[in-house]
Amino acid sequence: MKKFVALLGMAAGLGMLSGCAIAGPGLVNGSIYSGYSLGSGVGPGTGTKSGEACAMSILGVVALGDGSIDAAKKDGGVTQVASVDHSVFSILGIYANVCTKVTGQ
Image 1 (cartoon, rainbow, N blue to C red):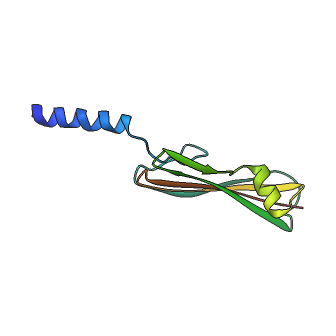
Image 2 (cartoon, rainbow, N blue to C red):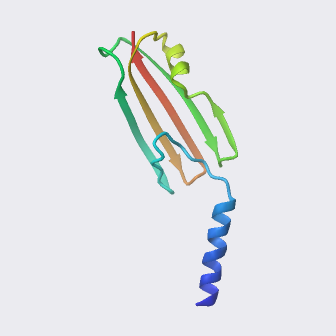
């Protein structure tokens, strides 16, 4: 039993020290897999234009990209935002991806 408790403590310690890829917004993350979308209406109408921008993380050590609303607006030529959606994907803390999609005029 003492060996089990010692191993459990070591595993917990290593988990706190290791980096992992975490995707947000909303801080809803599964430790093995996350794949979900969040969104909301922001302005009037649905819009005819859309743009998307993404950011990614590898092992929580390297993070790249611009997943901002401004980058998504620029991608789609949107000037007046009607809605914003976020999609999140992560697996085993190894790779994570967050994309922002805007629609509007």
